[in-house]
Length: 228
Image 1: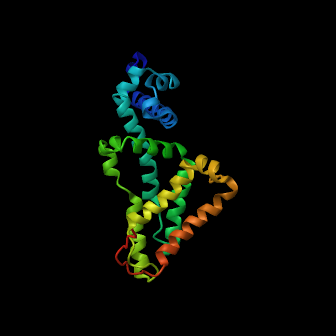
Image 2: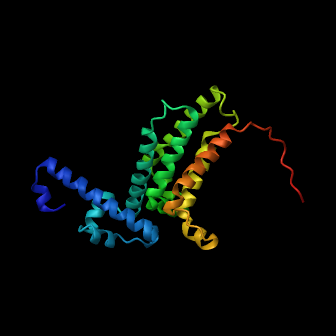
Image 3: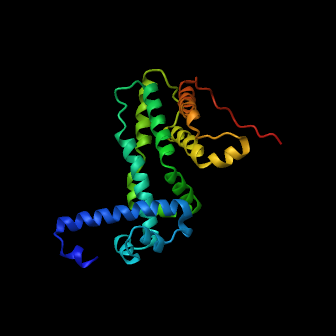
């Protein structure tokens, strides 16, 4: 910490520290998302934030802890949005559509989040597993979905054979794929999944598919037959 910071009043030092930490996190998010965990360099992050490597270690402890803090910030943002989602006044179908739209909009607006999650999957979620903060965050979306599904079943709109985590996985999968695979998908099929003129189409399509699944009559599941 600099001598100027040390001589400033405590409240001002706290504000300066919070600003510095936030700036480091913002730049580190971009660098890790672009270059991956292995490729990102703390020296470069320090230079881009006009601070020092020593200061980054002071705030975060090291490169691994900095990457974990970046993941914690990224996941905290989407979890906060999920937790603040107010669908109690909506019927189950409209509430489902609203949850789909929130996930769709967030993933589209945060491509760095998609890249960070992809990178963490390459590392087999080792940083997430080691983070107490992320283990406490849980997934408000699953809780919201459970409440929506319960209301839908009680109203006779949704069939009973539905798991909230399964539905969450389907929603997240499409939203994630649309951003993460846009380049390879475009190269193979000649279609840009994130083109502005197709946004409403995919947003509505996903919501329609989820609602169709939830409202379809439940069918008995017989034994799986494997054909030689």
